Length: 323
Image 1 (tube, rainbow, N blue to C red):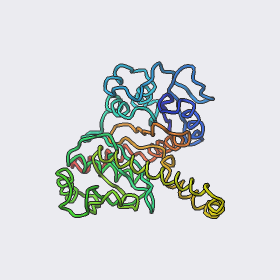
Image 2: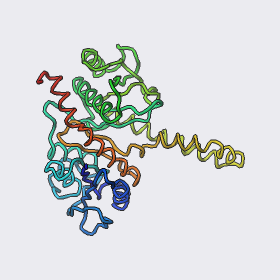
Image 3: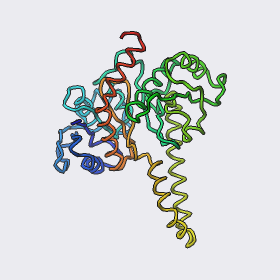
Image 4: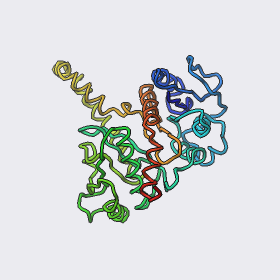
C-alpha cells in the first residue's frame, strides 16, 4: 500500500483544501500522510507535525536550507528516509526542485530533472516535458527528457512504444533555433520512436505521445494551454446562460459539454511528476482544488505501483551501456 507524503501547508487555497483532497484519496489502496502545523485538523489522517511553511515567492535554494523542518522539505525528506513512498506538494515549485535535489538526489546519469505533465490531447493524454524545471537546456538534456517522458508514457499511460516529437516552429527538420536543430539530430540517432518536429498548435490534437522541449518553452506552452482551455469553457458557459434559447440548447448538449470539460480540466490529472530523482515527487498546481489534490495523490500512488523511478533508472543504465 503506497504511503504518500502530502505537504498540507503548500498551495494557494489553504490547508483545508489539501486535507480535503487527502481525505478523498484515502482508500485501501493508498495512505496519505500529512505534513503540517500542529494545530492542523487532520480529520483522522496521520499528521507529521512541522514548524515552518515555504512561501510561494521565497527564494528556493535559500529557503530549503533555512527551513529544514518546513512542511515541504520534511515531506520530501520522508521519501528519502523511507517513511513515505512518494511526495505531493502544491507549494513553491522551485523549492520542490531544490528539496528534491538536496534530499532525494538525482538518479545516476541524470543531468537535469524534468517536470512531466499529462496533456489532454484529442485521442488520449500525451506527455509534455520539460514543463518548467529547467529554463535553459542543452541538446543532450532534451534527449534525456524524451527518454524520461517515454518511460512515463509506458508506465502511467500504458502506451507500448511511445512516439516522440520535438517542439519547434515548424515540422521541417531544418527549422528551429540552435537548441532544437542539435536536439533533432541527437533524437534521430536515439533508440526512441522519434517522429520529428511538431508545432504548438498540434499538441492538443495529439502530435505525439511525448512532446519534448526546454523548461522555459514548456512552461509557457503549459500555461497558455491551461488559460486557453479555461477561457473557452467559461466563454461557452456564459453564452449558454445568456439567453433562453441558449439555456434550452445547453440542456441538449449538457452531457457532451460535461464530458469535454472533464477531459480538458487540468484537475483530472492533478499534478506532474518531477522525473530524474531517486524518489518519486509530484508537483500540483498552486491553485489546486481538493479534487486536483486527490488526483495528484492517486497519480503519485500509480507511480509507486509501476516503479517509475526503478524503470527510469534501468532505462538510463541501458542507454549508457552499463547493463
